[in-house]
Length: 109
Image (cartoon, rainbow, N blue to C red; front, side, top):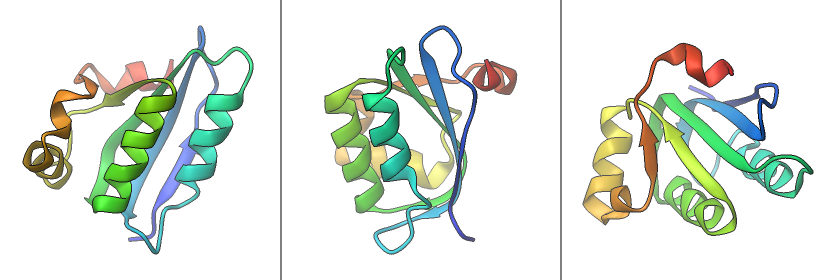
């Protein structure tokens, strides 16, 4: 499944990127550019990645998460899909990220 990234309207300094599909080194769906744009945007203080729709993520996705985490206040909106949860747990990266398992409606603002 091709990766897609949907940028939701900013709300109170928060930008939410909804991610779905398979994210790997060959197909990132513009996520890298969307994250860079959010980091550089005036008025955006926090970035949230809604990862509930991700069906596959590899080390290149993890690398992107680590890079973005180092550049801004990042939260992952979940619950995390099992494959992504395993990836983060196996690498210990799960300890780095704030994960919000709140209701889906919250991701829309």
